[in-house]
Image (cartoon, rainbow, N blue to C red; front, side):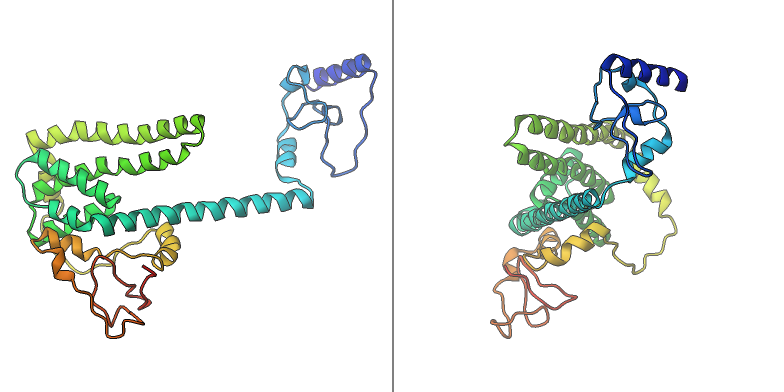
Length: 306
């Protein structure tokens, strides 16, 4: 192969009446004529996809050299690009966090009033869907359902259907994100295609397991066997690494009071959390105020801007 490459290079040199320019030690070759294998890389000064040299195999050393060997200016541009990607990715996640918190504040009472021990499986499924659409968080819906089941307000069977519904309701979030690409038709098409993959996965999963659960109750019996002779005890709440990074800034803007949802689901009312009272209205803190739809940060004892 190397012999054929050298022959191809020599023939090309003869036809073009050109000579390869010697390069310095450690310098990245800019032409396929400067490489021992004669392989052509994207970015070469004489790059031509129709040239036979484009089909030549590059060595791993050439691949590593092209990938990892850069000038100081190129490394600087790479560093700036990585920083910009991290910056905009952080504020994208920050926006999603605000979206979820705002949805909990606006729809917390309505979502809490949906929960109940209805014996109709379809009703339980729809409750999970609507609650997740209002809260924009399937994890919040699931945690509320688990709390209500633990308190005896909702049966285990009904809780299973609600959690199935939360897996469908969470698909609304990716549709909202896809709508952010409205400015470009091609990007919008690709974004909706990706969102539809997520939607169909959840729809098909529920379409399979929902009727099986109604007919056989296998999830109920399986979970009952898993927790047999189980003794409940206090545990720690796990928080994902992304949430730990985004939440400190988001909590300074708005922080939803999740207790309202559980209280309304157990038969309470949003009116029970009003009026708001603070010992010092000019300097509200977690320890000196009562809370409504919005709460303060227990760890820092500070209240958000809104």
